[in-house]
Image (cartoon, rainbow, N blue to C red; front, side, top):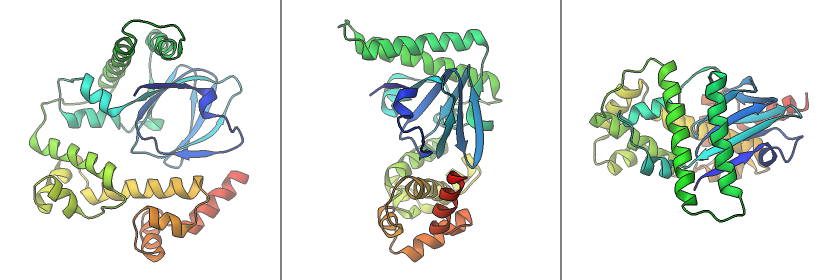
Amino acid sequence: MIKILTEENIFKNKNKSVSFRPSNYALFIIYQGTLEIELSGVLNIYQENSILVVSPLKVYRLKEHSQNLKVYILVLDREVLRARINFNFSLYDVYRLANFEWKGDVIKVEKSEFDSLLSIAKQIYNYLYADTHRFFKAEIITGLVTSVVYMITGLLIEKKDFDFKNSSRKEEITIKFFNLVSLHFKEQKELRFYADQLSISVKYLSNCVREITGVPPTTFIADILVNEAKIALLNSKATISMITDTLGYSDQYAFGKFFKKHTGLSPRNFRKQNQLSNIV
């Protein structure tokens, strides 16, 4: 399913700082005002004519926004993208593009390019929420979204130094591993499960992921777990015991040890420190 939201959808509670990890990729097309979002502990200020790429692999925290903020948020369903778009380079290159590491993950574009993207976003919004019946409505919306994705991808390619190539077997294994982890990370934290799902050895899985990404696969699992834990600690009133159970840990000690190893804080202190920073 394709969705497009506006500032009214995400800032209903204006006094609350909200952390979130999106379930899909999204584009924030900011065409008026300013928006403050904390990403990986760094506060970024996005101004008009900015495009922010939001990834399901990262945690974001909505902070402040100007009263005149106007933004379209295009939510990109991963299954729709896979079914509709066929890039002429490897799946891992697509992954690298979608999760690029620029300051604040913001794309700087020329005014004419931004206006073109904004025009398409408005058309998508109108087609989705117009009361009148239109023939081929779903096909038109999908076509417009596909155009946006190709335009954004083209901009990223122009601004990044990528050596594109066809998918190798190791890249395909790495992408499949990423997808499996995103589905099973709460109940499955051992590499053996993922290797078995891919019908390969743990050693070969580790070698593939490390060779393609430069980091061991356990790091990817840990990053997702830490992000999910942060969201639960910041956004819910659930006890640490409840969060421990939700994330699939046997007891609070195991969860606390894992969380402190990766953040430097116990879950309780992390929650307390962030509550204090919100008050200040």
